[in-house]
Image (cartoon, rainbow, N blue to C red):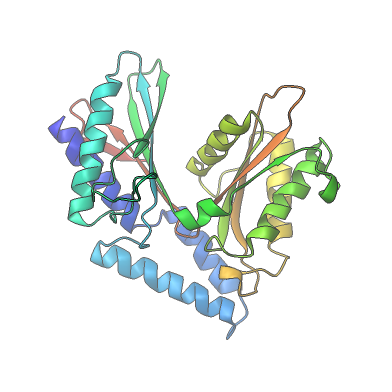
Amino acid sequence: MEKLAETLIELIRRTSVEIPDDVNRALIASLEAEKKGTIAEGALKIIEQNIELAKRKSQPICQDTGSIIFYVDCPAGFDQLDFEATARAAVTAATKKGFLRQNSVDSLTGKNDGTNVGPGAPTVHFHQHRAPEVSVRLMLKGGGCENVGAQYSLPAEKLSANRDLDGCRRVILDAVLQAQGKGCGPGILGVCIGGDRATGYEFSKQQFLRTLEDRNANAELDALEQDVLKTANELGIGPMGFGGKATLLGVKICAANRLPASFFVSVSYMCWAYRRQGVNLGAAGQIEKWLY
């Protein structure tokens, strides 16, 4: 458990202070595409400088180090209780080291004990498989981008959105329009079509574990992802809502079974500080491979 704790602290540090390569490439491409001398270009230059400074100083990219969400793929028999206890200890230690800001508070009292640990914090999702490997992915999701997530129930008459892919397209784009850069754009969308109210959001956030450069295996969803991305970047919202071309960096969509009475479209929004990283673990809990 001691080696695992060291691994998780390093995973937290790297996730908090470094942007994944695929996200950095998308931000650089967005900067190059913006018109020179505009506020949008200036905003993206500041983001670029922020990323470089955070990595060089090993300090959090954003003052809001976000909700701490672990995704663990593990074999049957893996001790989930020990892992979760170690993860909570690692979060506390990483907070003391300054890799995480002390920003998890008691919802009833508003008190902050400075550990980032409490009911639901951190969140750990386990998924068992029959392979022997253990992989741990970590997402740090800020509160600002969480605030502009949205869930729609189709049909949505005001948007003329019916229970079909065109209706899904309409509500996803409405979520972007309503955000207006408030979620620290350029953003990334994770979307789930279907499910219930809880699983819809859960699956939509799991889409953030995909790289920006991958393509959806489902042809219809792939076409929808590309269409929403193109259309959103033609809305003129731009970085931080200042206008420009870079409203979104990516769109990732999945579908889940639903009940006939319900048709939810759940939209999770990720800010430009797209903090996600992962590792494959060795037998002693050491890092064998970085996943992003």
